[in-house]
Image (tube, rainbow, N blue to C red):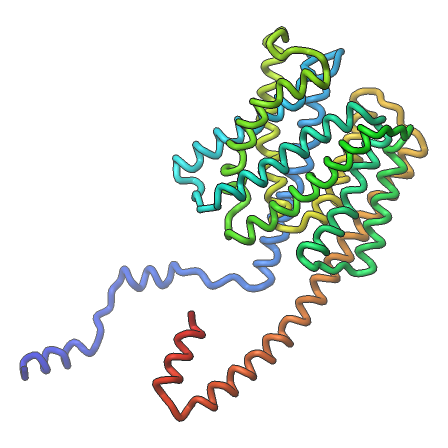
Length: 377
C-alpha cells in the first residue's frame, strides 16, 4: 500500500506527450458569429444559384426535347418519372458509398408526401392542357398567397406588413410580364385548383419533414424519389396518352433525343436537390417569391436564344418583379433581426427563473442534483 502511495505521488506530475501537444496546436479556434453568418450566407447563395441555373437549364433542355421543331418528346409526366428514377439511383449510390446518412422516416408520411407531389405534377400538366397560358401563369402566381394562408393555418405563421407588400409587388410584376390571354373553363379551373393546393402543400411539407425528423434535404429526397419514380412511371404513360393522344411505345428514340433525355434527367437531379435545400434553409413562401427570378431569366433567355418577342410591357413587369424580390429580401432580413433581438430577452427571463428555482432547492442537495441532471439533458 505504501509503495502504491509513493508511486501515485511520483506520478502526480504528468509527463509531456509531444503528440498530445501537437494535437492541441492543430486544434482550430471556434468560429465566431460573423464567420458562421458569412459561411451560412455563402451556402444560401449557392443553394439559390444551383436552383436557378438548374431550373432554367432544364426548361431550355425540355423546350428542345419536347417542341415540335426539336425532338417532339411530348410525354411530360413520364419524363418526370425518368427524372426521379435517376435521382433515386444517385441517392442509393450515395447511401451505399457512405456519403449520406439514411435516417428513419415513417413510410406512411413518405407515401402521403409522394401522392401530393405526383398529384401536383399531373394536375399542372392537365391545367396547362385545358387552360390558356395566361390562366396557367395566374394559377402559378396564386401559389404565393395560398402558401402564406396554409402556413398561417397549419403553423400559425405571421407575416409583417412589409413582407405582404413585397409579395404583392412580385405577383403584380410577374403577372404583367407573363400573363396574356386569360381563358378558363370548369375542368381547367378544377385542375388548376388541385395543382395549386397540392404544390403548396408539397413545398410546406418539405420543410416540415426536414425539421420534424432532423433529416437533410438530400436524405429526404433520396427516400421520396423511389416512391415518386415508381408511381410516375406506372401512371405517367396513361396520363400522357390522355394529354397528347400519343403512345410512348411508338415514339422514335433517336440518339439526339436520348442525349437530351439524359441531360434533362441530370439537370433534374440538381433541380430537385436545390429545391429541397432552399425550402429547408428558408421557407415555402421565400422559395415561391425568389423562385420567380427563374421566370424572369427564362423570358430573357427566350428573347436572346429563341427570338421571343420582348415588349415594353414585359420589360416593365420584369423590373417591377425584381424590385419586389429585393424589397422582399430586405423585409425578411429585417424580420429576422427583430426576432434575434427578442430572443435574448426571453432567454434572460428564463435563466432568472431557473436561478430562482435552483436557489429554492439548495436545502436538499440530492433533489438539486437530480433536477440539474434533468435540465442538462
